[in-house]
Length: 226
Image (cartoon, rainbow, N blue to C red; front, side, top):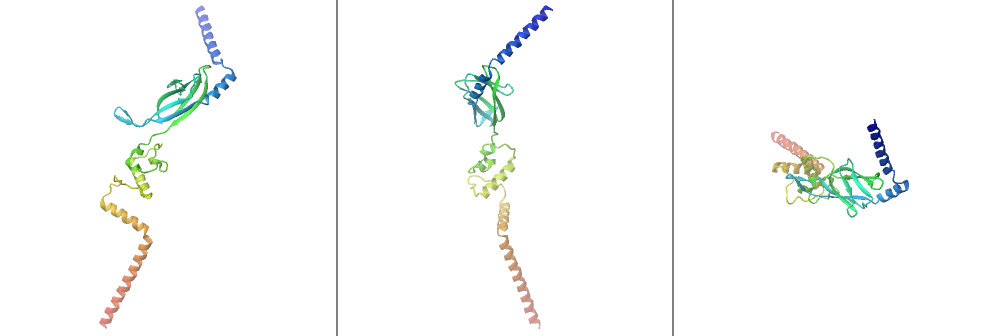
């Protein structure tokens, strides 16, 4: 019974002590800490090509927490990592996606602020020769970051159409694997679509001329028979 009483008293003291620490900051102090936390900024830089187990990986970013003074530490949501100030900043490597950074006070041991960061998905197609000479800001499929999944055939078709529409040179590589006949057929169809009204008019005149010629020959033949 005495042991049980001691255990209850001990637990009470422990939790009482914790409550005291959690409430050790006044409202004014917490307000001040929230104001200081607004200076904390998070920046990121893509690491480029990283080889992991002989496989190229483009998902990694160098993430920096700036203006992190000694009053704070940062927990990445889920308890993945605790970051503390090292000369006013902290660094970590993260992959693309959504991340929550919880700013906590060392003085009060409470969460002061939360910063949400989105690390974009690197677009490996931007490295393809087909994107040479294309402004990624104007054509998203050749931009550095692209959030949607596109198979290569669709990418190739869309980029090729874009290059043709904007008359971007394809020097140095062949963007079309079609044979000579298919290329000629495509060129002919393109020409026919562009000048279809002139072609229709020309064919109409040709048909009329043939009809008149046939009628003239028939009259001539009838005249001979008479």
